Length: 164
Image (tube, rainbow, N blue to C red):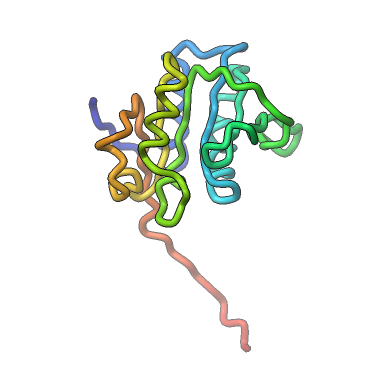
């Protein structure tokens, strides 16, 4: 594997899009994202925007519960949203979000490894922030074909005194 360094949102999205294009994913293929409802969902929708022009079917699965799979659809003037109704899974690419590796999440690295094995033939990508997969010890068990690890550092917050 080779490491490359990028910056900002485009540094997250462009390599993902290029990877998906290099896989030859197109209309009729399926990209399935697995993550935490609420916290991972906005990042999944951002990734979905990056590859929307390929017209692949995109699906979000909360945690690893495939019975709750929902399509990600383009809502005009809004963007990509998890709101397309139930989906039957036939992934070409599995995308595991780093929120699943956070402490206290009910997901084990062995479950992700087994998920990838059940969908043999599908590629496996990981997208996380702040080295979450490494910190959680997942990299010794889960073999990602692509790993995007972004940093949110520093985060600068400026507030006006509210006078309270």
